[in-house]
Length: 237
Image (cartoon, rainbow, N blue to C red; front, side, top):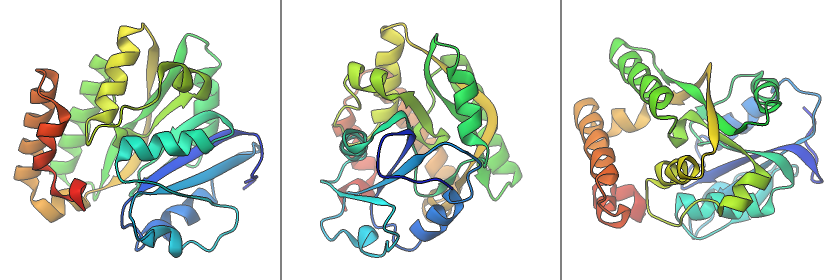
């Protein structure tokens, strides 16, 4: 691991809200990323209590308090970032150990402004394999990955396009729509990231899957994210 607080190749930006129980597991995993490149980790806490930041004792981690809102938090992290490539990572998602080399290889092709990974959900039951396969197929067809697939972008492009919109949800979909309108090209890597099934476990498999697909459909039909946010009670924590 080669984490430095100065200019580097990669900036991993982790928006969090009450993630004190799992943040150490993620940070420990990131220490084992295979790379000779310098990189930085920025944890952006949207809670007024900053409970996640309070449990982080590693001095190499950049701790960024911020108002709540995933889009707002990721923009705040990007503003602090010094890396050439921004990686937006959810707290319950693990990168492949060779993620940096995979990203570097594809971004040597200047036609790509960024990309994302294939989704895998843990545990890998038949139900979750089906959801992951559907998500991967959809993103390959639409070239519009969601945040749990770990979106990465060139920082110069991210800044030029104006970053994420400060909306309560669907900020990843909105960003990808803007990129497509501006003819930016992204790539979906075949290599998987591993994300937790905790929200399906918490809210129920069928309900969560149906709700998510209905909300995505309504958003694409033009319903504002602010109205759709009522279906996500944790957004108001």
